[in-house]
Image (cartoon, rainbow, N blue to C red; front, top):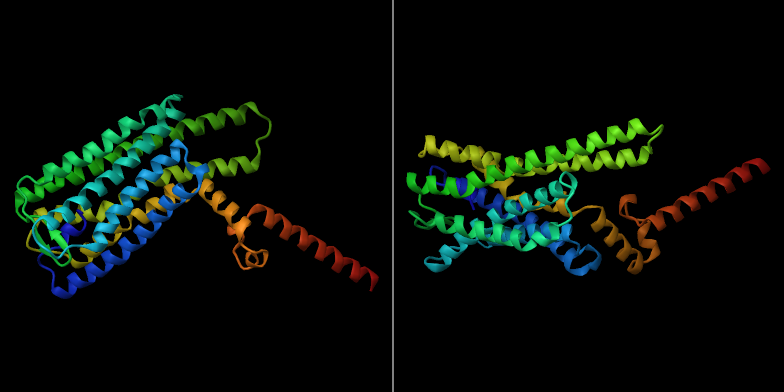
Length: 326
């Protein structure tokens, strides 16, 4: 994985131990978040729609990337190569899946096409094929050695250039594509909303809030990749300019934010209203009534919230009657 590949020489053993601990902790959070989305997709049949299937593939890539980062590999030979290449492969696959989600949304909303489900095979060829190609290209001019628990790529100029071209170049290409695509989608929906407001005397306030919430949520999607990899990119550029001088705090931010990408994706893409609704329905079936009293209101099914509100209204009416009698 590129983030940990920037935290190399020039750091003390203590610094590397701290970076290793941060990577393990952040990767564990990403693994749990991604595994949760994968589990929801497998358990809840109502989530197995095409749009969420793409989120499932994204979460699966994040989960496997995080898993290999957590496991690490202190051995030599084939296993070392396997650990280094699998992290690279699945991290590239992760941000490529975000471009398929952006493409699907753009084709559906802006282009008004309904054939996106027919493109699933092309999506798989594009994501897994591209990830495999850049991972193989990365092996050219690179030898693997070790830094702490990671298999380390060659620190020479050629190895760094190959690594930059096979990871950061497609990464920022994906960021630019996602940003441009979501900008077009959001702009079109806002224009449509203005037209609807102009043609109608009144617009439902609740629908407006929900629509704005969705638009704001889409606007955050490109920021996830930027927030996850901005410090890694800066660290990589700094490594080109001053290869013998590592900045500890920059390496910490590099490793920490990149390892949290899976968690960010699982929250933004995966933990949506459909997932929450499916969880609420299962909770309503299996959890006893008394447990809901201890849950926050946003985790309670709507039927329980309505019942709770009715009980509150009854209690208020009883108290008012009592006061009137007194």
